[in-house]
Image 1 (cartoon, helix red, strand yellow):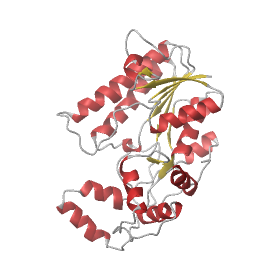
Image 2 (cartoon, rainbow, N blue to C red; image 1 turned 60 degrees about the horizontal axis):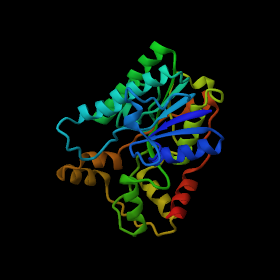
Image 3 (tube, rainbow, N blue to C red; image 1 turned 45 degrees about the vertical axis):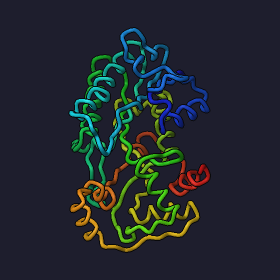
Image 4 (cartoon, one colour; image 1 turned 180 degrees about the horizontal axis):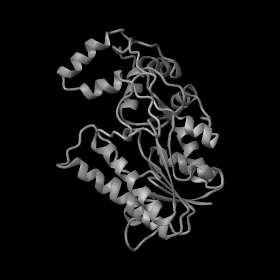
Length: 307
């Protein structure tokens, strides 16, 4: 099977392409970087349709969530990349006879937080709260319209935080703090958060990209995770264990830290550290028979081994 992957040079895209190739598929790589790939810009131009000849498209490329957005109208910028670009790519794919498009959305479509023990499900009413989440939700709606208009199958995947070798951003900074032995005031956080290992997400995407292996996935929305929800405190302990370094966590009351964060204008950061965000991935297991191939600890050990 020939699969077109956008965002092929990214954190998830690079691993996904490697897995698809290992499974014997032919991969058409699209990336923002033109070196060695067809550019995403060309993919949505009127004169080039690199999805031609492909049976499936996996759309990973996106304007991603950023902590500090300096654009004058962030939502407009997110819509231009994540909604308009997605819709145009999908219509080109349908015109080229692509059978299935897998769209990597975000749990942010569901919302920013859950009550402990009340995880998000694919059937919940969407409640995106920032420009990135809104753009992902609108992109999903655009894809459903393309599916209705053309008959092309669409699969939506909304992952929570993805971690693994090569991860960047806040997770990478957290790992660095633990490795350096920085004392962290996070020893008494009792939230619950779902994460998904890179290997698990890639495995699930590859399954959904194959209409033959997953016919039941057509026109479905999935939430996916490791199925091993942890508190911030427990996550830090597991990172320390994987990197074989001591855990230096101070049991500072969460209420005190939330108050300090508000005074410093960091309430959003506090929400991510202390709030809960869980997803229910039962649909992926029951409908597709999927189980995560790696555990959280195994993926963390791979991160440690990769440096």
